[in-house]
Image (cartoon, rainbow, N blue to C red; front, side):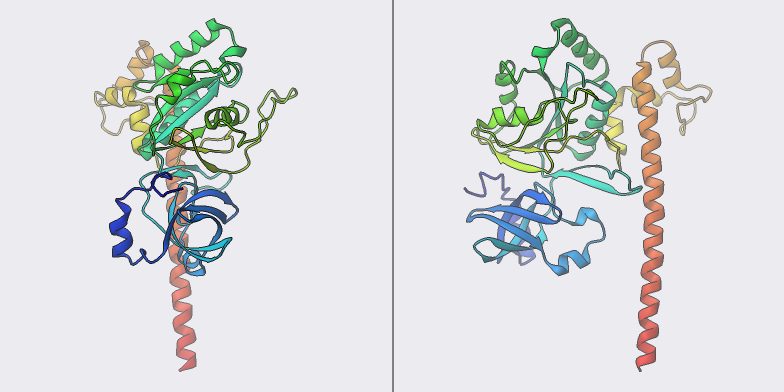
Length: 355
């Protein structure tokens, strides 16, 4: 396998030379297992860990490798390597870390396009879809909507969902497929370009693993049934993994996500809800929150039916989440600076005592 087949961009060559990283092997993270990684290189695949220096210099989780990353590594035996540096990323899809305020979690890096997968039989949720769109828009990744399990729903239901998407989502391709009959697969594969990297985003049980297996032509992911008690999908994919497809495209599967918290997503929200933000320019006050101010053009449009009520409420909810994330992030960084200053003063005192 060549680096080009793995999606290596020649634009990284000058950076490697300039930073004296060309002496190391270049590889791409294809699996991540609790800070142990599987890296694909032109020489083969290697289990790898990061160096102590890279670990010590990390200021947050985003400074650690993630699936999709290009890294500089040294190979020490036929099965093991050390990662010395992460090469510049072209894109990072991330969300708020579950249960950790002010922190983000990387979903995948160096992604060209994302397939937002929802099932038409029970999973479809337009509000969640807008969240996925916001993650993509913030990352500069092209979103594409994939509706699965059309064979399990009445055609009228699929038609209703397509109309709902058309009402609230603009300029995003939508493809309805059946993993059983392969209907819609030709249209889906036509969107995938050789050498480009794509990822699958969606909840558990929507058919992502089956879709990946069908696209790859082999069983690369286990699949599971819907829980009869909860009517929710079971978590089958437990880690992120990068797969090279027969058509030359590269696909990353992800564990199902029930929580899609937006992080630093100002531009993502602006793109997802551009119809709301365009009307906001006509509000009486420049700092209008669109929640009750006099002369709010957005509220007026909602009352007149020009903006979907549910979309408007989803926008406000995500704005509140973004504001909370930013405030907790600022507080966490303030405490980190205080701790750093205290540690620096402590070292000065120790140095004085030794003199």
